[in-house]
Image 1: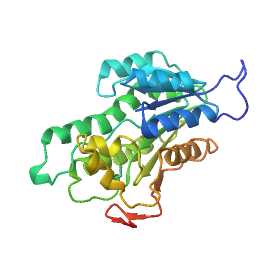
Image 2: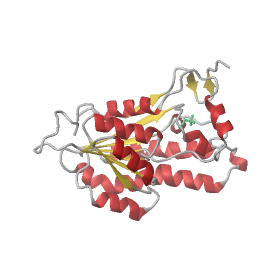
Image 3: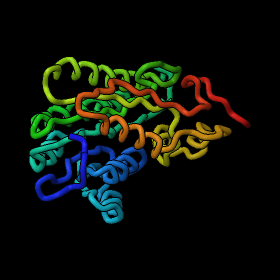
Image 4: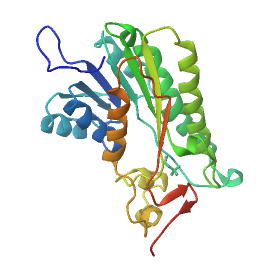
Amino acid sequence: MTPEAGPTSAHPRPVAVVTGASSGIGAATARRLAAEGYDVVAAARRRDRLDALAGEVEHVRAVTLDVTDDASVAALAADLPDVAVLVNNAGGAFGMDEVATSDVEDWRRMYDVNVLGSVRMVKALLPALEAGAGGHVVVTGSIAGHLVYENGGGYTAAKHAEAALAQTLRLELNGRPVRVSEVAPGMVATDEFSLVRFGGDQAKADAVYAGVANPLTADDIADTIAFVVTRPAHVNIDLLVVKPLAQAAPHKVHRTS
Ligand code: 8X3
C-alpha cells in the first residue's frame, strides 16, 4: 500500500484521498502525499482552491466534496474502486464559548463535519480501502481529542468522538487489511483554523499565536501524516500527538510577549 518504487503501467500510483484539502493541513498533506508517490484526490467544497492546487501540483486531482452530504460522499466513492489512504482531515472549530452560553448549533455543526464526516467517508470507502493491497485510514484529530479546556466544549467533544471513532474502527477492522491511525496536532498556525473558530475576527485569531516563537505549520502535520502512511504495511501507528515546543498543554503555551 506504500509506494515502494516509481509508478509504472503495471504498478500505478496508489490513490490517497484527502478531505478538507482546499487549505491548511489538508492542502499541505495533498502536496506531500503526491511527492511521496500517491495519486492524490484532493477533496473539499471550495472547487476554485482545489483547482489551483491541482493545477500547481502534479498527481493531485480536484474533486468537489461536502463530507456533511451523503450524496456528495457517495459520488466521490463511486469513482474510486481502490484506495490506499484516506485522510479524514475535513473539520474545524466553530465558536469559543462556555458550555452555559454556547450555541447548540455550533456543537451540531462541529459534530457533523468532524465526526459524522469521517464516519460517512469511512463507510463509503471501506470496500475500496480493502481492495488491492489494502488501505489506511488516517484521522486528523487534535490534542482537543485527548484533553479538554474551558470554552472549548463543543470542539473537544467532537475531537474526543473522532479519537473514539479511530479506536473503535481499529478494533472492528482487526484481521482485515486496513490500518487506522490518528494524528493529533496541537497549535498549528494556519490561515483559517482560528479565523473560522472566531467567526472571522482576525484580531482574536492572531492573538492565539501571539508571542509564540514557532507554532507548528501545516507542513509539519503533513510530514507527520506522510511518516505514518509510509511505514511498512504491518506497522500501525495508533496515535501521534504533535505539539510545538512552546506548547506543553492546550493552556500552557510559552509566549515571548
Ligand atoms: C487544534 C488544537 O488546542 O486549538 O485542534 O484545540 S486546539
